[in-house]
Amino acid sequence: MEVINTIGRRKTAVARIYMTAGNGTITVNGRDYKEYFPTGPLQFIVNQAFQVAEAEGKWDVKANLDGGGITGQAEALRMAIARALCENNVEDRPALKAKGLLTRDPRMVERKKPGQPKARKRFQFSKR
Image 1 (cartoon, rainbow, N blue to C red):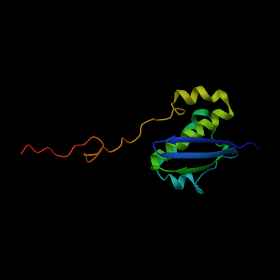
Image 2: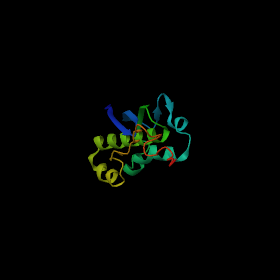
Image 3: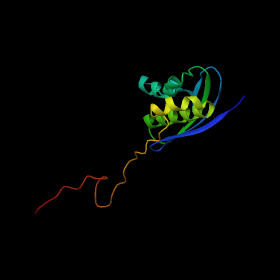
Image 4: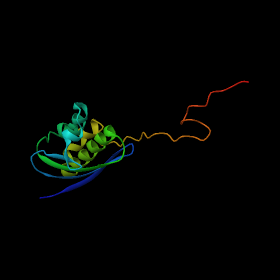
């Protein structure tokens, strides 16, 4: 039984997964993914790669998530699963790439600049 190990990132979230052939169990940080991601849209994001590759219920995923918020973690997990599916079956790659699941989203939070309250916001200007 082969274990596929991949990584996915989004903002500051990192998802490291171990995927094996199984019955569709997804475990995130030792908990079921439906408990870890309680809302429907986040659960859809996690399952999206399996739906595109038509591989629902065929793989067990054990994921370690770290950093970022809950949405960033869900999208990092989606990317890691998509990469693992490509590693297993090269024919899935064009469909996953067309949906944008293999592209690392480069958008990050801009750093705060000195002399300003936030990255772009300025302190109120006083003429007198």
